[in-house]
Image (tube, rainbow, N blue to C red):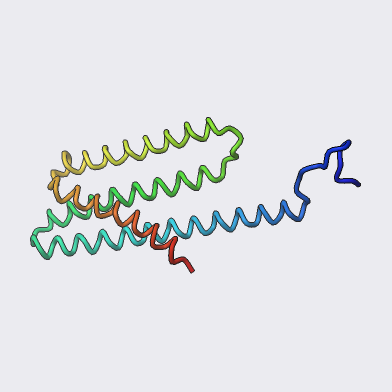
Length: 155
C-alpha cells in the first residue's frame, strides 16, 4: 500500500501514531483533574486558615463565618470551573464557534453562581459584606496563585 494518492503524498497518521496521541490526551486529562483537585484542596485549606485568623482577630464566630462563606463561594466557583473544563475536554472540537459559545456560557454561569451565592450570604444569612468579600477575594487569589505555582513546580 502506498502513501500516495495520485501524484500527491497522503497526509495522515499511522495507527501507532494515533494511539500515541490518544494516550497523551488521556494523560493530560488525568493531570488536569489532579491539578484541579490540588487547587481546590489548597483553596479549602486557605479558607479554613483565613477563617481561623479572622476568628482570632475579631473573636466573633459571625465574622469568621463570613470569611469562611466567602472562601466557600470561591471554592464553589473553582469547582464549577474545573467541572466545566473537564466537560469541555470530553466534547469534540468540530465547531470552533460552538466551543466559543460554550465558553461564554460557562463564564456567565460561574458569574451568576458567584453573584447569587454572595447575595444569599449577605441577605439571607446577614453576614458582614466586607468579611464575606474578603474571604472570596482571598479564595480567588489562592485559585490563581495555586494554579500558577503547581503548574510551574509540578513533579
